[in-house]
Amino acid sequence: MRITEIEPITLWVPYEDRIRKAFYHFGMTEEVTVYRFHTDSEHIGICENIGPPFSQSQLDTYLGTDPFDHVMGNGTFNLDMGCYDLMGKQLGLPAWKLMGQQVRQWVSMGWWMPCMSPEESAREVQTAYDRGYRGLKCKARAFYDVLEQTEAIQSAVPDDFRIEYDFNGALISYEKALPLLRELEKFPVVKGVEEPIFASDIVGWRRLHTEIRIPFYLHGVRVTCRPAAREPSGPWAGLRAGDFDGALCSHESIGNALAAAWTFAAANTPILLQYVGTGITTAFALQLGAAIPTATLPGVTASHTYVDDLIEVDHTIQRGLMKVPDGPGLGIRLDDSAIDRFSREQPLVWPRHITVVTLPGGVEHLYRNLPQAERLMKQGVDDAFAPHIMLNEWEDDGSERFDTTWTRLQETDWPIFEA
View 1: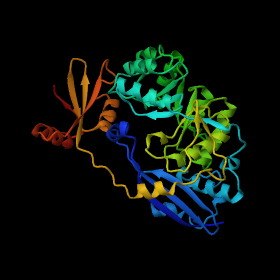
View 2: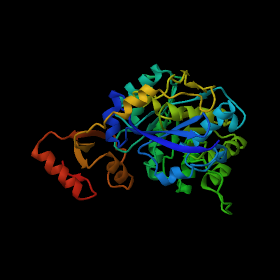
View 3: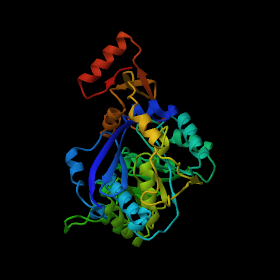
């Protein structure tokens, strides 16, 4: 079997209405590219990526190859999943059989949300719980009071719910992180923090880890280097030193994911699968999770955020566990009517907006957008995680004041510090 043609299909799949504007403000895209891998057999493989299509030169590396050439591949997982779909269909087997022994038929899967106000956070976790999830990964950002946010979440869900906060290093340093994490320890719902400070600050990370009971999760599981290198990878060194309690397998190649699977199993350390996409990518993550021994932390694909999963039969979830599809390959079928519908959808044009960070005392600092605020506050430009800090978006109201302010913010990479 040879891959003869790769057909990219550009779609615009809206996020659900309640979160659509918030996701836009966070700089997220509704563009999805689905691929059909045509072959010289009757089989067609499917895969996807968030965003525009890959370059033709990247697709050309797959043309003319046998899908089996990509077993434990080190290409992008988005395209390699299409090869695993084809291999499974050719053999009449689920993709996990080409990855290893099955260790579970149901995989722990979690909800995902960006940082929101305390009130919005409580509503979002209630939605997650109502839809059968028992775990949630939430971005923690410097422009919201994470303690107020956690208090609202704790009061909204039962005791069997768990959240992991992803700081992406936003707590900056040991001195800044320690008092806030000690307060977070008081909330039973908080079951983990991902990279509270940058993992490159090895000494600061270790000091925090020895003083905080909440498990620390590292972003990254890469334990092998190709070609062979004399220096160990960062995750491998941290795993041996006991610097973290779990790690994210986030958009890793299939080869890296499976290499990490057995390394982390030997260390009895859990893995959180993070492969973002629609129901197609979710099917891939479930196949991978079926064969990774310690993939026990609630995985994240964020497929629940879209109005449609693009597959004929929705994935089954029960108490935070999602059933592994048992059909050949990825075990799913594309919903052709959904593909046709969203291929004709046009991107929504949103009004201009300005990010307003309100600090204690009612002082307002104005940023160009949320990504700028996140980046600059990590650099210490503003008072990160201040008590009662709040975020609002000032949408274009047609006023001269808005237009003048918006123009000023475009002229320099700096916020406006004015009351």
